[in-house]
Length: 171
Image (cartoon, rainbow, N blue to C red; front, side, top):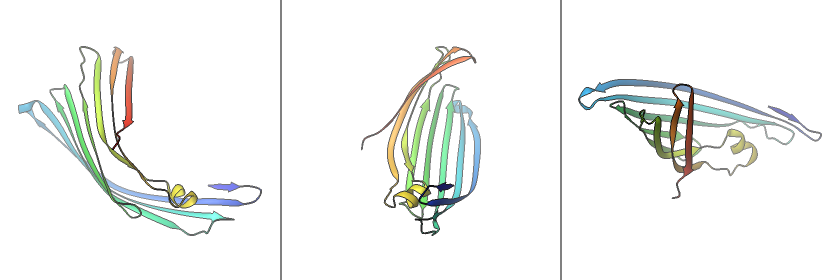
């Protein structure tokens, strides 16, 4: 990424390496008319950022993260679908975090609608440029939130409408 102006020249060199392993195990519990899946993830991400140019110092900055995640999904009698997930991030540059999510969906095919809802937490880290190129005091964003909505079928497999609301939860 190179930027030239009349007074200066700058170039930002970024590199990200991500290595991950994910797996899913599926099973049924016929006694309660349910199908389940359990998923797990391990992920390592390393990032480098080097600003070069007239006013840049040319130093390479690095950060990394090791993440673990798990999710359970269950479908009951082809009617109720539930999800529960959790993720933990061990960060080099920021406080370690654990986030979670719960969701439910209830297809009502006889009415042509599917109400759904979810709640959980999330973390958004600044980009490498935001952290090291603009404002060295920038912080991560950590906010609980939730949402819900309804999907409605008008012509099966041809026309549908989704109405969703997503918002933050005040602490």
